[in-house]
Length: 493
Image (cartoon, rainbow, N blue to C red; front, top):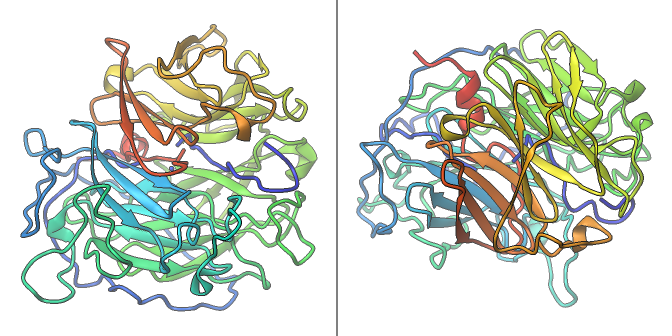
């Protein structure tokens, strides 16, 4: 990635901003704020407590008085979606993973312009509802003649959407739910009744928070969808008062926002000093939010070279760990934290080197082979058909399949057929294939997202067959797009 100008592709992987958990059709929106209710908070440094409860699995099913997409088919009462943010057009694609059909597309923030929102990370809760984080101020190169709506200028925000129409809100009381039913039916902001809330994030010491890392905390009820908190990490990468994403260095301004999942209200913040940019984040089963600080540039940009940060949301205690491979992030059912990305000792492009790191709860670190002139981005823990393996995507168009029990083994490299396996590029922004995120769906299929090809690719790991889904412009997500990472760490009775 380039230092200095636009750091267009920014983490935590987590390994990769879509929704795939099963969803429920129950509806209890009494405590959910409607459209346009976005309190403007002032700078805060307050504390909050957050518990990590375990909940039950959820069924799904949706009835609506509006036309449905014929590709929105559920299997035995279970629905499965991946939610992918389209940074280049300020929208969110909802793709049915059973049918590989995009069944809805939503605008993600106020305004009308393509470049108003710059959405990136998505996170899916145990009920199946999703939040999408809008990074704005934009990291995109806005073409000459294009403008940004004044009401979104400099604002980062988070937007929640209901996965099941039975959880949407009939705002105009016409007895039916008005919502998108496909990529050609993006409704004007304020009209889609499956948008539950949108929250502008408070400025910090005059700086836009430039939101990045995003995750639900897993305390929501899987059946009703009520409860739970959304954790958002900021990316104020300089302490000179400008907060420019291009000016890398430690700052004391970064923090976590704790957002009420029902109302969208910012209930609290947790300040973390000597940090750079919270690219990605993921929850474990113990109420800890793990953050990837930065993305592998020289170690001095994170405090003492320790760019992996664990924050207990209840006690607010903070621990830091060495980070050798930084960008995407995920957590497995045993509490191990997986990160993948640029080896922080390597040079700038085109001489990037990448690796995968496993960090235990006690801080024991294992690092894979370092791969020359590769740039890993998203990372995901396999389940179902993909279980037992860690999946990383490389910017030139390949999936790397690591043995989760021994990452010192050489990974299997799987090239996406649509791409030129010999693709080369001098900078990751110019790569013609440019895979960004990876996620696992309900059946254990492996999804990857290409920001240059405007497509998502589903790999069946059993057959090695790929399927392609064309989505919106510059899809970016590399977080928990399907919700399977969260489901994998939270015990459900």
